[in-house]
Image 1 (tube, rainbow, N blue to C red):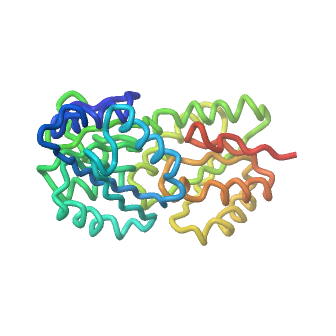
Image 2: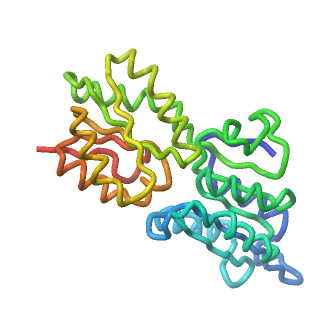
Length: 263
């Protein structure tokens, strides 16, 4: 298997599905493919991606209840992921879809035989999901969001938008394997841009208000949010806190909250 960077996730999953079950029209006798879907985010936060996932399958001839069934497991509690992954494996699924690095690692630890398709992974090599991009090995494949590589560009956009900017709070989760590389990769470009970064470490939702207070005390004048499951599940809360504290905000995820403007 090979790692697809910037590729169509649905197409990649479909390739695996096609190896286990043909479309409805060709099934003689009918075979129902069973897909496990493990996401380290809340179901509400995952809703737009999930709908796109289902639509993509329908476009390829896979209809739930006819030739494919999907067993969903959502949680924003990382400690639950191993049990949920093991639960899906016990269902004898044909393919295991893993959303975010945490979920992909739980899936990898749960099975070395069932094909795993991951997404929302910052660096699959650093995370230990694959041996290398050229020769991944094992039973995992998927796409990387290259979030760590783009941290410098996001800081550059902040600086261009707020030319006098000198201090930026970087919101990241030390418990999320994909979040730490984004924090580390932001340090060098920050120095090159003349920015001082404040490490805003948050690993639970209830800590956000106090974290913002501390960031303001540190004289942070803008906010950069790393791509991580906790932040993904709390986008509105983070945006509201940024507005309340008058912090221009840039996020890692496109198509959702990208900028929070303050008057």
